[in-house]
Image (cartoon, rainbow, N blue to C red; front, side, top):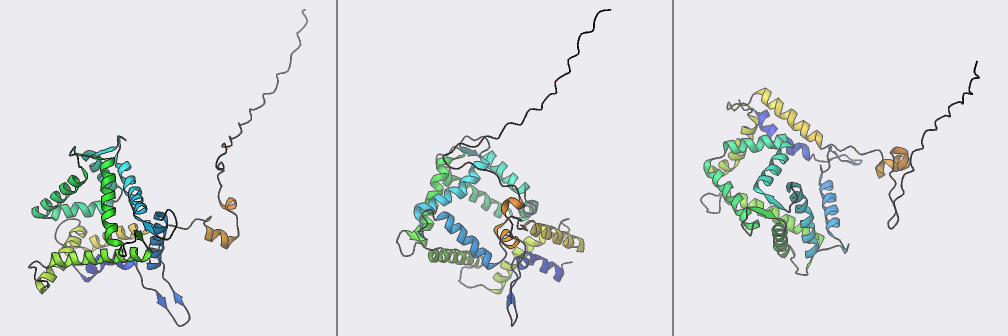
Amino acid sequence: MMTLRGFALSALAIGLMALPARADDQKKVVVDLPGPIDSVQDLQDTGKMLFIMADDNKDGQISQQEAIEAGYMLVGGQFFRADKDGNGAVTKEELQQARDTFLAQRPVLRVVVQRMRQTRTPQAAETARRADQGLMSLIDTNNDAQIQAPELRQMVQTTVQSIYAMSDTNRDGQMSPSEVNAAVAGAARSVVQGAFQRADTDGNGQLSQAEYEKAIVQPANAIFTVLDANNDGHLSSQELQTAERILANQLRRFNLPEPANSPTNLIESGRRPAEVAPVPNFAAPGTRPVQPAAPAQPVVPAQPVVPPQPRQ
């Protein structure tokens, strides 16, 4: 039977990813979890890093062209990875293979996707199929059942230009950090509004108790289906323990230990980079790379000369 522990497990991932900071009268102690992004400060630092990477001319703002080029870098890597034969086009088969490879490398996500496909209604399946076809038709402008590199490039450019036009609120042709933050807040608000509209089935602008319960129950049922490994309609203690182990293993994979030759560790230890790990020698720009010296050939000792023996 479903217990309180089962409901708690559903929120375990979210709870573990963001623990509140603890403070006393003396100082504030921040609880830092293993992982690249596990606090608001980490999220802000990541956002700053992405902003700096997109800001090519380092003027503290992102122009439309810089935003488009960042989109090319983000989407282009996935395109080249899917284009197995390297002909500059991705077929449906290559796209499916890329999707299968992505899920094969993430077993938990693969199980979630499989369970969701098994439990969705025929109407939901048809809606998903039409959405895939609509997206494909938007990208595949020449209708050859392939995604060509120029088609993907045009899609990225059009999408970025549309988002940029809405986000550049002062219409100066530049995106400041404040406008980027405001755009993120607007996107989050749009997601909340979309969820509200989907839950408001009668469209009266209000959520009745029945509509609210339905909106809450549907995600809970999806989580239950994922946790119910044997599909018997019950969650056993073994299934909950298995889910806990899988979740713990996934969180453990986010643990990125700081290497011994990181700047922080080098400063604290007072050691040089070469004292921690071998440092490769790169050729200076505009110079020829130094060819490694050929290994010395072993010296073969000369054979002693045996004088001829006199004849008897």
